[in-house]
Image (cartoon, rainbow, N blue to C red):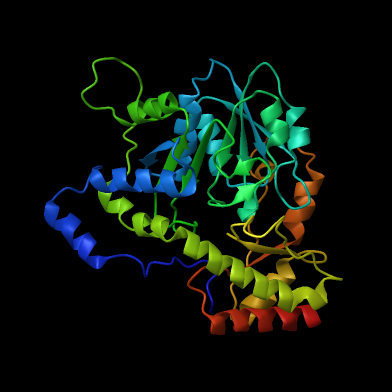
Length: 351
């Protein structure tokens, strides 16, 4: 079975792992600092600073708390996203407000702007599947934009480099993400005061005030796998784009029955997922591909309004979710495996 996700770990230096073990320092230290410096320098820009934390969910919560919310606040986000968004908003003390999507799955920013009230603290905009969302309508409102970059890094979107247009950004280092450390995450911003706020929230010990804090720092041990992946990230993007191109060329003959993913311009898609919209319901396609040795999935477990009681009418997101089919795409996917994926898809699409 070709797995739907697989980490690319061949760049990890085992000697460096041994060095850290022998140092006896496994908690936050120089490796985390190197990861934060390299991440911001290579993926965001010199004006940015970041802080590494224990999970992407925690990164979302800390970013919201650093925006210094009022007693009652709301956060507007897409219904087509990971459940961690709702959990993080609630953990920060806010109320999630869900919005429908565009046909490609990204947040419908025009509709999101219509949901702004006096209680709105921020938008959380997810760059779904690696395709940057157009944040310009959100930015024009003056409401802070929190970019969820767990699925898109290092590429250009309509509002500029992903992660740099909003007030704050985050990413996840979970096992299936673009940069994989098993667990972990990052909060970054060009606002140094905001990142200092995140750091303060993560350091609970040796504080003389009663502020509620979290033991949220990533450890050097956990940061070790992520650091070389950041340094080779542009190479990873090239490999992902090449696989996506092969798939699209191979599947073009079926474009009358399926909707293939597209990029707005070269190098404007991180290709975290290769998501095809098939006719009807994707369940049958998924079952048949799995039977042929290719693990295919829906890219989102379920729209958030189908898990939490947070509204009912999200027709575009529901249609997208029902038809969505995600195929394996990652840097360690060999050409032989790519051929197997393409052959399996052709066989299912052919009948």
